[in-house]
View 1 (cartoon, rainbow, N blue to C red):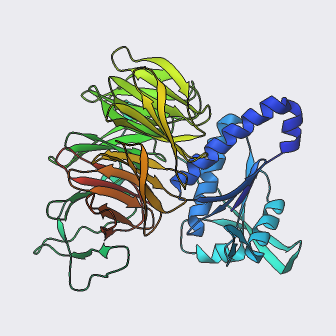
View 2 (tube, one colour):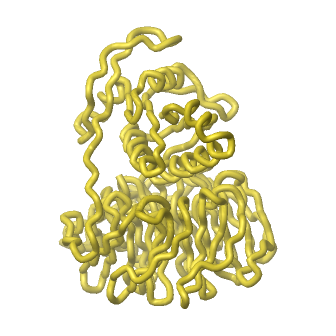
View 3 (tube, rainbow, N blue to C red):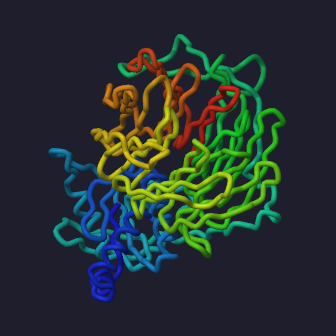
Length: 491
């Protein structure tokens, strides 16, 4: 997929160097946030455009629409082009005729539109994606004639007020357990052992699928619940229950496994992060709404929005610890803290480039920065850094456990292990796919793999892990108060 900003030359002349630089920074932050959502791999960026690779063409199309929608409040219009074909990888660079074709299609795309080639239209046939025929074109420097199609924009439903939220059709539940057993037919690979699914007695099996949240009991490897949630992303633990964000639906849903019930809270803008602490649910909204980005505080008991702290566009990751809510801003490259008692913003410090994840524990606040590949260790009392480590690949998520900091990298398909006693890199673990969220249980580290699985890492022997095959694109993983593992699965 290729994207660029429409009318960039005119915008740059109108805004001046400083204004244009600020606009491009906000644009890049939005694009990278959506790439994170849709498992896109950023290959290159130059000026105002992105070159990205995806595992499936539908992911690229969905991501392009998400970027277009997210940039509208900023008065930024882009165009995008998607093509599918074989590529050549040379010295870490991706090239070939397919890349040239996609680039040429971008030149023909109209503002605010996504153009695709005929092969993409054919591959996604049968989906709910619709196209308009844009005729046959010649692509400069690319042999032959190419039929191009414009993707028709699907309607996006707005969020309802909290009091008007209905019980959504996507909240149908299937609670029948199924045993996840290591069977004779399990596939043994160099990277781990894959579980297989088997029925538990006569109960119908839980079938993992996209747009759902799955519960796994690690004591007996039983899938205890499957709750359908539209476009589930980040999660947070509330005792044995779990909260999950829906980016597309702009809701936060509480799932209670004890009663088999769900509760929903409508949000005024698209959520970007979630945490639970001090009797409240804390949700960041990076863009949109009437006041821009900020942090919402929702009461766990009354499930209503009780307060809001404005922190500016670009707010993303959030974590709770030491009486504070710690919030990262991807646009300003800052870490802010909010007093949980007064619910007011306090100090703010500069961190690395594009902070993506935060973890609090072991007497420190940890911040992972995607652009410069750094992990910062910060003293929560003085708001000063005590260590900065550089890892090989862009970090995505963090988890503390077993005396170590575990860092996922979606671009490098790896988990980096950091010894927190010595502030040193211990090892890098190759994953069997693109890792997303990560969480520590009492006896294991769990990693969501967006290609359709979760990995269970033995902290005593990290190179020995087991892979649980799922479906869709697992996005986040958390461990509940009962040590059950929850996984959000996207399309």
